[in-house]
Image 1 (spheres, rainbow, N blue to C red):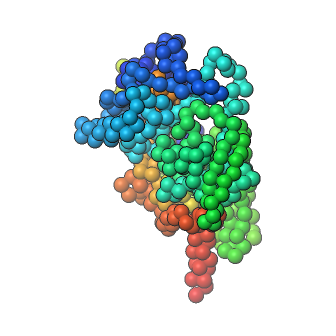
Image 2 (image 1 turned 30 degrees about the horizontal axis):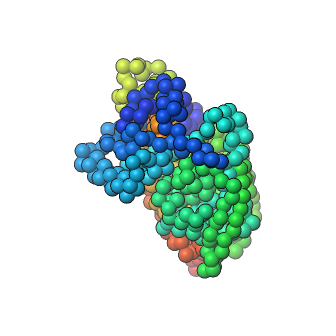
Image 3 (image 1 turned 90 degrees about the vertical axis):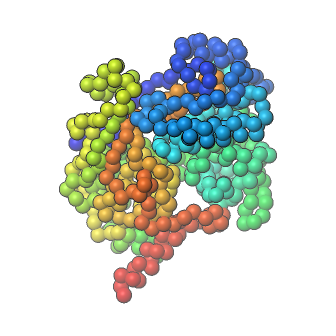
Amino acid sequence: MNTTIFTAACSAYLLLTAASGFCSEPMSHRDSMMALYEHRRFRIENRSVEIYDSRNPKPESLYRVAYHPHLGKMVSPDDERRIMAEIDERYAELGKDSLTTSEMFYVMKPYFEYLRYEDPHYRVAPMVPIYVPTYGRDRKFFKLLRTPAFDYACINDTLIVNNSLEEGLQRGDMITAINGIPTGKYLAYSYDDRYNDIVVPLRYFHYGDMVDSFDIEFVRNGTPGSVRTEGMEQSRAALLLAKMNNPYRNIRIYEHARCGYIRISTFYPDNSLLVRTIRKAMLDFRKKGCTDVILDLRRNTGGNGADFDRLMSIFINRPVIKYCSGQRIMVSSRTRPYYDRFTEEMDGEVAELNEDEYVSEFPTVGKMYIGGMKLYVMMSRDTGSIAASFCNMIQYNGAGKLVGEPLLHNALKYGETVRGKQMIPVQLVETSVSTVEIDEYTRAVDGVLQPDIPIPYVAADYLTGRDAMLDRLLEIITRSHTDRTE
């Protein structure tokens, strides 16, 4: 079986667009960038660039998403009127005659959220600008971009420290402001991710700011506190925080519940080591008398589907696993290179893929299966892409129980993403646009995969520094041991 068919097969160069309206036809890279720097550059001392669109500060209509099999055609006249009314209201609220990149995201957020509801893969993000006359191609520029080194959970607009590399912050701290700006303001200018690194909402709000330090206000056990930090280089902070969440450092046994635990924070271009690590841990759990196993995919937004047949074989004791009943693809310059039968004249069409062009089902590897323990898979609204498919296969095949909160609407429906348009003159870019529509075999209700054991997020439970969902699941498992013996 060619398991790479699960992977994101399409990658492409960035498509620059001109500034007619919000997003338009492509012009040359030189022309678009010259217009950007000659006419819309705004320099702030000791900071990077802020870009203003003085010609077209207010979007007059909704752009259509290219490359996607559905988003470009889904907006009805009634929807457009309703969304444009919300956009007009936000523009009037700002009361400005020109918009920064961050402000354009805020104004357009009703449309971005509308598109994301249909396809959680779809995402727009600000790019980090470089002031070319000062920094040119100097890589030292990126070392100037710093961030407080912690990640967070966001629960009902409450931002709570999850992991921290900052001495003055600890798990469970409620962040109330950064550099004098309330966290609610940052969140209003970004997506409502359940989990993320703090650099993400900071970048969405400030766009390309470079600052020397961060004044962070927080509440710990009901008592206000503050800390000043110089933070850490953004790329280094991201690497170290990712290490804190990787599965090789998050395998353990909860003796009181006779339960093994594995966190799977992402899937890799080569999952062979991950598969070996998980299977070895499962064997160790069983050897040490565990009766239950928890797989934690709450922060897993997806990744790569390599070796997925071997991975699923560990948990599903069936000769064949059904994946999907059909797939459709948007024909474009991004997807044609992978299918000989598509021609340039077909661009813009949504074509049904032949059965030999996608995986409808795949055989398991019998020797990989490890039984004898009950399986629980924890998920959150951030669990997406191939991680969402993992959860779905577990539930659909009756291999375990899903625990936590429902996935986002249509988390299973789309895939094979490419990068979309850059929205010159503001520096927003479509970082992820799906090209394939997928009919997965599922028990999802109205496009939403539901947990078998619902455990909602409650902010107060996480202010203690504990993992409330995990604690609750361990209680359920421990109680089930008593029920099994009675």
